[in-house]
Image 1 (tube, helix red, strand yellow):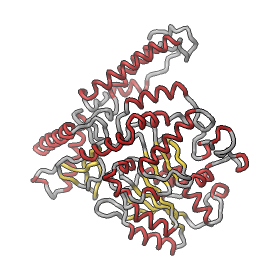
Image 2 (image 1 turned 60 degrees about the horizontal axis):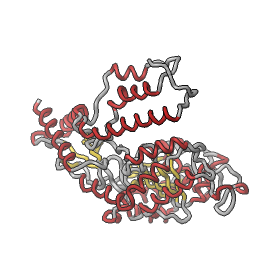
Image 3 (image 1 turned 135 degrees about the vertical axis):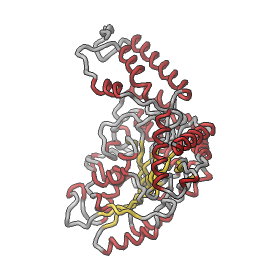
Image 4 (image 1 turned 135 degrees about the horizontal axis):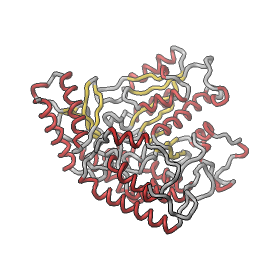
Length: 484
């Protein structure tokens, strides 16, 4: 390996050396982005390549940054996850918006701590989060939002606020006392298609998985309000304390949107916190023709959404929006009330973000969101989502209603119709072969106990020809495997 030649003490670089290195990196990235559509969607690593990356020892002597950059080009770049390709339809992983890539570079150059203070990053986050609220129709007056790593952290913050409100209403301090056996157990309601991060958050908050009550859904995977109302009544009669409903504005499996308006009515009547997991689907509310399906979203107590999904903001960039900003602060702040910064007094004039969530040191996530939203504009967000909704319609056997940009389907040759076990096995092999082929990439969902192929349209450059290619490779692969 080449020894370090820069005269600046590590990890610093002479400004001209840095300029040269950064230009090399920009050229590398630009070439990668320009050629990605012509490359395989996914290139599996060999066992030797995996071993080399995992077990390579750290040398005693450092090497020049050009050597490190070349190592990235040779060992990492060829084996990307695949989500940068317009024929990647797996999971809910978008490509990075190019301006977001630039924003990450600029944010790293400043490297501020966004716990709070009086510097530009704080005000950028305020603006970017407000834009998110306005895009989905969430109220801005009195509310509070902040950026987090993603939907999991956002959900944890939101449910902590819900737990705090329930305890306060019942006359006890959960932050000081913790959860006590003498208190009625707090019950959280979620559908069977609710994201696993909801259970994880409930466990971390001490609620316990046994106190998460799963609510039946209708044939389209949406929470049934009548079943939920009966469950709440039964829990109250048994001495338990219902406190929160976690609904979905776009489930990960099928993109189903729960009846949010009816759930908001129920939660208001029962004094339950309504949390909406909109990590993937909430931005669909920005499309006027789809807004009616999101009726009730504006009445939620909290919403989790991930700009790093549909908006293509580079990961990590999640957001939590809470209607009662004062309550959110009460759930997390460790600053005595008489010392707290208020908008009309104190350093910078704004409360610190660290009083509203679980992080003290916080990165400058807001810059990539702020720049991406400005680049898109309101109309750009609307058109991006609307185009994906129009594309999400491959003509194989659909296994769930298409509500957003997720389509669940399967390859079903005539001779196997009705033989679900054989179809499950066949479609699992179809998925694995399509992934390995590099021609397209899709994943799976389990619907009604059966295996479904799952395609999520999320790439800003995906076209009808890419969808046609997906359909073609599924049909070709299915026919070949079924005939074997």
